[in-house]
Amino acid sequence: MFVFAKLVATYLYVGSLPKMPGTWGSIFALPLAWFLYKLGTTTYWVGLLIVTLLGIWASGVYSKSVGNEDPDEVVIDEVAGILTVFLFVKPTPLSLVLGLILFRVIDILKPPPVNWLEKIPYGVGIMIDDLLAGVLAGVILFTVGRFFGVG
Image (cartoon, rainbow, N blue to C red):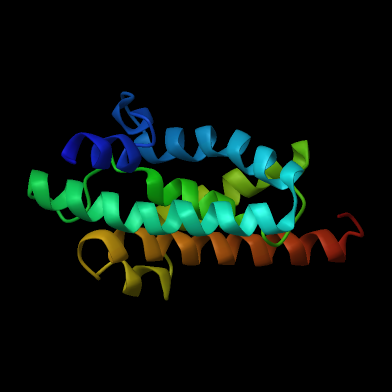
């Protein structure tokens, strides 16, 4: 069970790449966002739900096993966060890049209320702050797109 939890929590070991695991996890989530979007809205929502629920479970199991409430190598939360961004905007080449940048900035800076949620320990806490960071990035990207008449 631990091996499967680690596989999910690290997003197929992407979180084990050297330096910037959260950024790597976010980058490697972009093809999944694109793929799920091409399969339709329902599939996209189901995919996000599966990633989120599996992520809560796997990151909880893994973080408790290694004795760290939020290990750097756990990047399934970034995957869920990136998928959340594209609930608000269509994933185009430009929006994928901008969404990645916005999400990473928000995830790294953790402005309130994002930083309030990361205090929740283990699985739920690992996942929920990135989901909210994804919402914030998605809303910003959507708003900017409407303001400039794109999207």
